[in-house]
Length: 150
Length: 83
Image 1 (cartoon, each protein chain N blue to C red):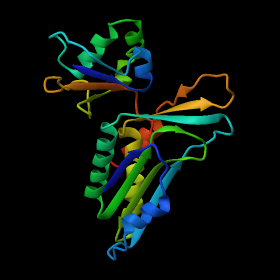
Image 2 (image 1 turned 30 degrees about the vertical axis):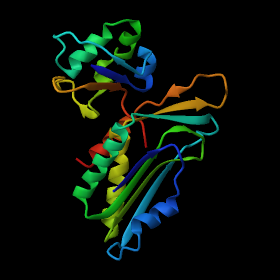
Image 3 (image 1 turned 90 degrees about the vertical axis):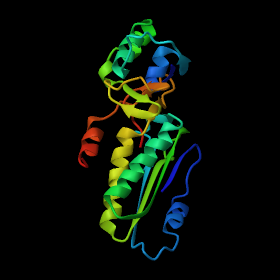
């Protein structure tokens, strides 16, 4: 399992190659990348606050849980923090397994769980320059998505 | 006890980190929220809806009935919005 919480962008292709590492037991690699939207031009920047130490620990626990539920050959979870602009990548999940279903399901599970269990908070900075930045509210739909796996 | 605050909880209480001596009557995470809410207006605002504030003891998410006995650090924050 590779877990990283970082300011820097990540290289999706390099992360997929590193996880696959020409391991002939792997028949499927799934990757999901979450990006910062511009919300129709209304958003200038997204600020991501995190709880250092706990964020890495929570992501590692979620990855371990995915590994217990599916026969994975490996997984990578990278979450950025700091100030991001529309178009910037925020989060990357890569899963590898012998067959595709486990890789797809584990990636879906990892995203659902990290949204509700990893200590990150988004603050939106509007592009109009006058209204104040505001914290994003947690969505009930995210809890429902996470509930699909219990 | 070391206390940490994140996101709008941090903004409302006005600090990211502090150390406070807790009265003996504060035994659980939920009791600590109630006690903090009584400190001043900023804390009252941060903890006005105590049910939605999440607590982590030594970086582990816990429920309000969790005992503070073995914890050295408590963190308070809104529901997570990462991903």
